[in-house]
Image (cartoon, rainbow over all chains, first blue to last red; front, side, top):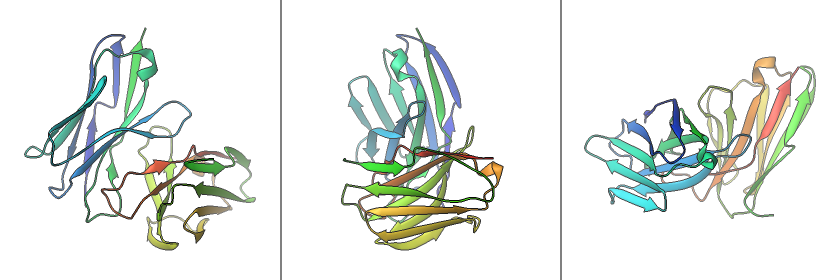
Amino acid sequence: GENVEQHPSTLSVQEGDSAVIKCTYSDSASNYFPWYKQELGKRPQLIIDIRSNVGEKKDQRIAVTLNKTAKHFSLHITETQPEDSAVYFCAAGSGGSYIPTFGRGTSLIVHP
Amino acid sequence: ETGVTQTPRHLVMGMTNKKSLKCEQHLGHNAMYWYKQSAKKPLELMFVYSLEERVENNSVPSRFSPECPNSSHLFLHLHTLQPEDSALYLCASSRGLAGTDTQYFGPGTRLTVL
């Protein structure tokens, strides 16, 4: 089955800095890579996803990059704000699996 | 109400109690899931349902009993739980049963077992 590793487990940045969270996956058949944000006491919510026919996708201050050869993908947040503080989960999935496999999560703390 | 809803949002129960968690999705999805989220642990998939049929049970103890009467509703029946079962229980749904389908989560039920 798929195995997703996510790093770092905790990331602390100053407001205005960039933050990068990295994930690696094991199943070369995976072709769907969503990222979820879970604020304290709230549900995980999809913030961006990428499919294997593209290498990069942007949405305002967030971007995701995918390297299928190396089997890794990353979330980039620029100009971080305190409201970006949350736990971020990556996941990887394929049509042959029931559901995406989730990483363990990264706790991002943005200091004002 | 739209999206995925869960009730109750908070539940405190003793080890001998019986309670049920409810999940409802208003998205017209065909697959529904239960996850357990404990502090400092990854999301743990518990059960997977597709078109009201259970397709996966991830070695979950029998004190957790799921029920899916139709594709919009999912229940988790709880009995004789242990303190280590205290966690956030998240329901999710997706359009179909595939790793390429986006999962939509409910707000969760915060369960405390005394």
